[in-house]
Length: 323
Image 1: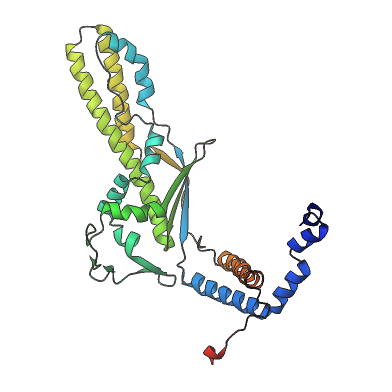
Image 2 (image 1 turned 90 degrees about the horizontal axis):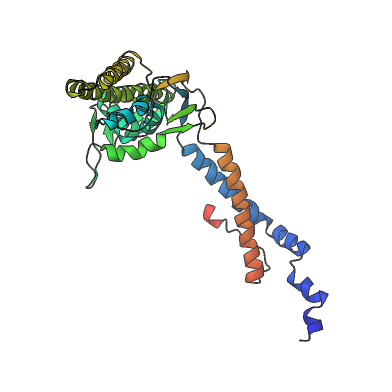
């Protein structure tokens, strides 16, 4: 073939799909395309209806104004080091806000919730929620709520009663926390099939996180006070003894705030409410996307059949199986 023939307009026209031909191919197979798309839509509707409603309780939190001892200690560290004394500081090395944010989705916090509030059945075995009675039904193959015993059958390394490590997989999906970098406001979201449980867990998370941080700061402060008292007895420098007394006063103040302030680390700006409207699943979105994907897949089947296999006859729908 000559260069002129290879580059002729007719060769390009032959390579381009004729839109009219494309439309005719789809029109000839309109019954198949309609039936196929309708089937996909029907399946998507049935599937979406089988999905369990999920409710989300949302809380807005802000860091508390409790003092951070690490900043106060830094100004005295140089003076103490000259005397060969190392000042005690926060063992975590984190601010109360950062510590609380890390704890919100930690295994340690989950363990506290399991030990103190027995959330395992609602976390793992809950199957459905009854709006009328506001009650939860559990998977009978997993948990017997009448006897409050686990009945599931598992293979090692899993145990009859779910471990904290196994439960954390469910906890990680149910709880989310994010911080606004501009305002510092923390958004806590808790998902559950029961709006009542989502609400209660939100309150428990805030309570337990604040108690968790407060307990850590009390222990740290007490250890620091004991250390400083020992240093006062052996330090010959009056300036350092005065410094230690001041630090003891600050640690004592930290302990007092941790003991009397319920929201020691995080303050509730917008308290959670029992959600009235489900947050998931988005059934209409599932059906719409399934319709689009079903139509595209049906069109692709028709085009592959026509252009790849040169089959021009319409796809026959065998309805004899439905008679």
